[in-house]
Length: 206
Image (cartoon, rainbow, N blue to C red; front, side, top):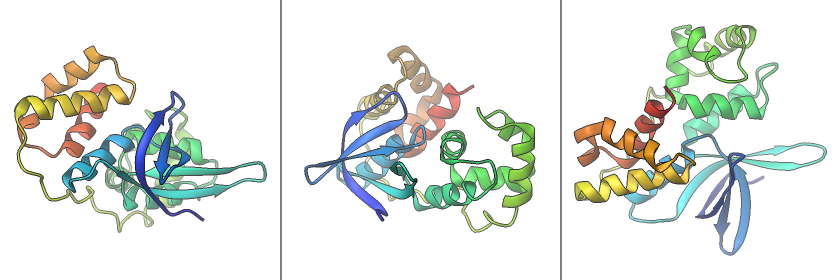
């Protein structure tokens, strides 16, 4: 089983998959929205352009599928989610596209079924089942993934360009990316890129 991959993204599909080149071998990995951007932010903070995805290997009779996540916490949440009746990998990825693992844990703890039903593919019954079955299974997850040590401060223009590029690589139009960058204001100058990408995605999903 594959548990982790470190390499460079060479293709990004419209279906939520990326091809990660690892030592000349391309792995097709399905990822939640924003996962690659978060992984790039973590990689940039570590001084490398090779991203790391924490992988869940899903075996079916007719296929072997890889699902990748920016953090171990998101992968752990995915594994818990697919253990819930009627929640398959596709819905689990959709949930983690809308809510990072720590945010999901907080939503479950507060029994906010409305936040869950706002996610495509999650109906009222599924949301209620998630709250019931996960209330004690996500308590160990932090409310937010630990931020890496901050890299040396970048010029505002450089940080804005990185954020804009990350959003357009995820499929957003340049005008949408510019709107999100502008909405984040002065935070773009100092916040970690991974946090900025997450907040920009939240703005664009409204």
